[in-house]
Image (cartoon, rainbow, N blue to C red; front, side):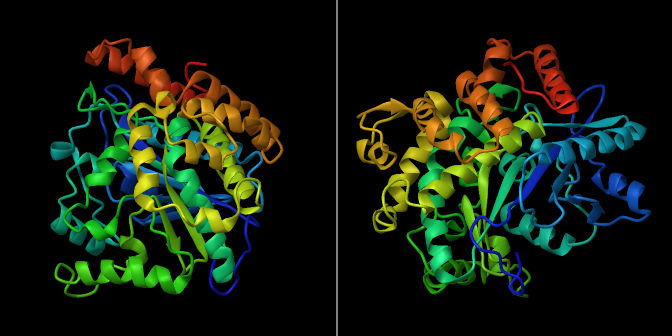
Length: 411
């Protein structure tokens, strides 16, 4: 997805999965990503290419990111590649008495005492972020997500892709929320990661907006309405021009014109690559259906103001699939004539359409997720109101077992 070799709509996909590194005995976060990468490369580096999957560091040293080593033409079976790399990483981490733990946030990490920023390559960027925003918070040092990169070539494709993604963003957490716990308690949100993410850059509101991107459907409009305010507002804090506008933009879907792709960032990391890729396939399939005109036409898609979509988004991050959607026009967009249904029921309604555009294995897993509820709902069921450290360790040890075996939790 580069400017030299642009891909057209849905020709390829890029997937990124972020994981916590934790102590095998206590499951407390363990800042050894630099040692992991040094172990496989012989030096402290930010990246390691391991065939079809690459490993890299993130802002904090207790997180490692796994990603497709470049865009891929199809994601069928891709979960096996990710799982093979997870197994390899866990074998290496055993030397440090560490392992990977899935999920979008650590349930009892104290970000004020447990945060260790990456101290090596790109540290100048991370240090500046820390000076501006203080990254000792859940919205910075305790959030692990799945990123979906979808390509476009030229303004027309960008506009259609951006319009479609904006319509899907509000309902993603209904199936992808996995973070009901922070600080050893239930926060009241099924997607605490996104609730923290919404607020972590309020010092400069233009950076994240309302998470759902504005009504911009051309490169020129995007630069005027999104990038220009970010550049203007960060200037007093970034005297040496270290931070790039593409890097700063923190909406729930960010447009990377330097790569010819839009990156969807509102998907919590799940319990296993099989679940991650099933959700990726469902989201991508739904976006594709919108672009192809399966629902209302492009001219009507672009009429939706970001604040209206954000209202639905903010409701769903609280209760995921149980959230009541009471905007009949939004439901009508999907061809649903009900006045009010839950977000989970909306995904049930959409399942027949998605079956024709999803990989059969991923469709089966996606169906199980829709039927059983988001991982957040399943984690809450497993905790059963007992938020003792003993119970947290029991449940999250089981979650780590799901990652090791590449299977779903609680279904």
